[in-house]
Length: 364
Picture 1: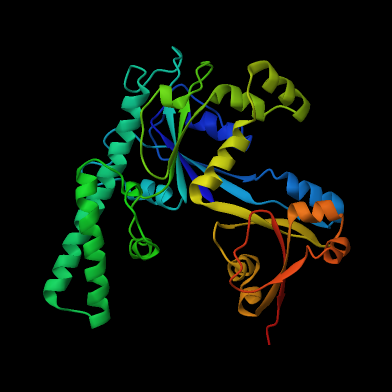
Picture 2 (picture 1 turned 90 degrees about the vertical axis):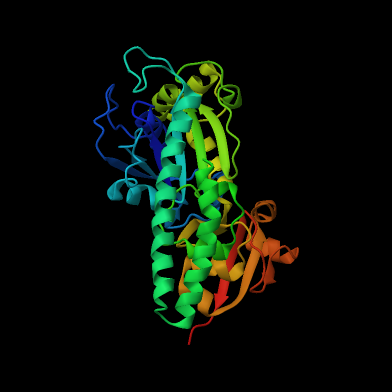
């Protein structure tokens, strides 16, 4: 899973990046305005993995991971005059979701690019730029499809595919012209497949993070109004969270108590990101490795097998399945099997969060 961190200059993007990744990228009072990308992989905290690792004492313990990409270079006007710069757009498009940092803190040492602090305005500025970028791409693509269809070139199947894509883009155009993101529309798996190779960004799920600095009002909905589908709005004390990320576990606990923070921002953001993208984890155990795997909610046993290795999916026979809680209560697999808690499931079994799987397969 890749999460792209975007925001206007001096919104505290890199501060949030450091808070989420325990990074130490230098934060500056002035933005260079250049395209820069900082990347970090973060282990997903999961007490189930910790517990299973203690139980099985494997040679290796592997947690699920999230990649955060801190993308600089966004500002007013990037979506106009022919669309967003190709390099910048490519950096945004590769992400599964966007984490949009909006400045809601006042600091005289960090000047605001728009001179005043107005989170609602800033949120709308960057949203508008992304919408304009998508609109420009949609209009260009519609023009190319129209020209190709007029030429009557290509095979019948190719013309049918272009006609389907044309109809979908014609649905997008009025939505974008009205200043609304594509993620507010109901899109099928087929729709998403049709636009996979187009560099559209407003269909991506978005986590809007209000960087409130050291403000005490933590209710994001009281600061801005933002009502869109596939969107989560939260407030985060960026500077405090960055300091917290650099501390030892013991000092961090004291810090959390002192500032009344329920949990570190990293845990909260990862949990929200998983929910936003419709993801969860299943687990595998053994002497060699205990591991968490990330799959979409609703994925079946064969999908889970494919996440481990394509050979397991190709030669899938059955999956041995037990819920994490049932294994912990039983103490081991032998006891769980004795009580009928370890069961065999077929290809269509829908994997649940925390299921422990052992895939039986045969590849000749």
